[in-house]
Structure formats: structure tokens, C-alpha cells
Length: 264
Image (cartoon, rainbow, N blue to C red):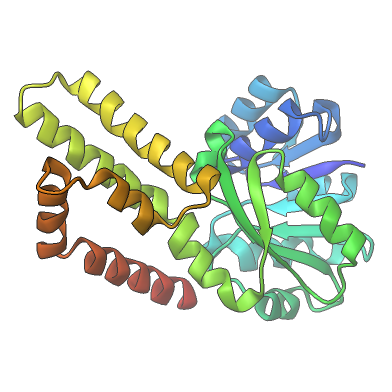
């Protein structure tokens, strides 16, 4: 089996790196195309894959194809490659807003498509991806796609109606978390901590807290209550966060993200 990427940007590179590192595909069985030469050369030098400036070359060479271009380029890329896509090929998409029905219309024929939404923590092997297949993908083929995705990410199969929610809660949410880390670090700097050290303390607190949620199975509210001692420092900080509308701000931001995804 051979794997191809149309688009060799940061997300594609993260996917390639994890897939090759975890021996899901060998580097000699991975192909990539990109109109931007520096992107092609970067992944070629990093991973030893085959590269081309011609998308059709990749389509003709592979069994599984990842469309790793930005959403605004999907229609032009599909127009270019659709006559070369074979009935037995698996197509993986990673574009928010591009529904299975929209993709089917653009291909204009029966194509096996798995729509996915990965996120940037894939760059460090800690990604989270939602996946939903169309009606032409068999259970065995979906399982195989999930094995590929697991090379760089945790994977959950979801219904397509939840895909825009995945964009908000996972695809875009690293940006919210980075802002939170940055804000905590700024406060620590204000209190006299060197900035590099402040980032380390803040980031480790976020990583450790996330790990507690995943590994203990406890409700986040219960874990929060465990830190909030009566009349202690933490409950005072929590009171201020509630007063300033942290929960509402996050919910409103995610609602805006979902609306934007639906409009793409």
C-alpha cells in the first residue's frame, strides 16, 4: 500500500512524520505534492518521501490519498484530480466545512471518502482527530484509515453532524489553550518569575491537568473541587474567573468557531 498527500504544509508534515515514525508506512511508500517548492523539499529532506509538483503524479501512484490543502483550494484540486481518482482508492480530507455531500458533488462520481478533522498537537504526537466515512467506505477500510490516523493522533469515529463541533472543541482549541498558557505566564512574570520559567510552569500545569482528566476518568468539576480548599487560594482565583466570565467566553468563542466552520 502507498500513501499520498496533496499539500505538504505543517499539518501534512506532522501526519507524515508520525505515520513514518510509527512504521505505518515506510518513507519510500509515501508521496507528496505541493506547488510550493520549499514545502516539498522540507518534507523530502525530513522524511525521505517522494515529492512532485504535479498532484496527478501522486494520485496515480497511491492507494490512500490525503487532501491536505487549505479549504479554499479544495474545489480546484478536486477538479484537477477527479478523473484520475480510482474507485478502489481511499480519500482522506482534513478541511473544515467541506461536507461529504459537497465532496461527492465536486468529485461527480462514487468515491470512498473519510472526512477528518485533526489538530496541530499532531506535531508532537498528541493530536486528536474526528473521522466520519461516506457510504462507500467499508468497515474494514474505515478501520484501516483509523490505523493510519493513529500514527499521529488519537482517533474517534463520529457522526458527520458533529464534525463542526470537533472543529471548535479540538481543531481550533489549541489556540485557546495557548492563550490561556500565555496569560498565566504573563501573570507569573508580573509577579517576578522569569518568562521562560513561567511558560514551563504554566504549560506543565495544563498538560498535567489534561492528563488527570483523561487518566482518572473523573469529572473536571470534581478535579477542580479537589484543588479548591475551604478559604484557600484556589477558590479565590476560581471566584474571579467566574466573575469575569471565563466559561461564557469559552462557550461563545466555540459557538463562533462552529458558525465559521459551517460557512466554509
